[in-house]
Image 1: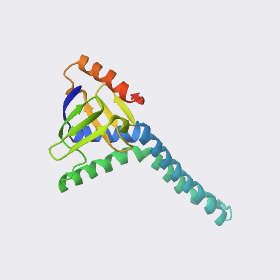
Image 2 (image 1 turned 120 degrees about the vertical axis):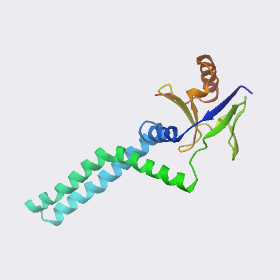
Image 3 (image 1 turned 90 degrees about the horizontal axis):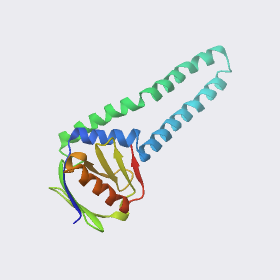
Image 4 (image 1 turned 60 degrees about the horizontal axis):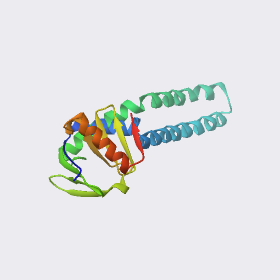
Length: 181
């Protein structure tokens, strides 16, 4: 075994991961931009249809103002609303007792695989399954195995800066897509 980490995460860590994924990550930024473009296109199609249906009168131009305002509000408030909706979703998961993460786990890194052991599950992944690694604000490392699943390694699980540096050099040999934020 090369490395073993005892990982403890909480709701804030999970929320921080969700915010990172939506607004800063390679995956989320693409989806958020696509979502914003689709909504703008839908409203953009509605506006000329509304103008044409209204005979390009003054009233039809006044009628598109609410749609333009709605589009602007949507674009400005999408990010804060998505965080609020995720917090509500997280609370509902807690009430049901089905969290989207395990609060404690042990992740062991071997030469050819890494293994996460939680109280309920044991998962083994080959390094070829890693799509990318994200290092965020010198606080956490996200090991992405697909566009929605990641393993979280908070910097608190490293014993020292030297151990972190050793792990960083090791993970660079296993994954070529490393993003530092």
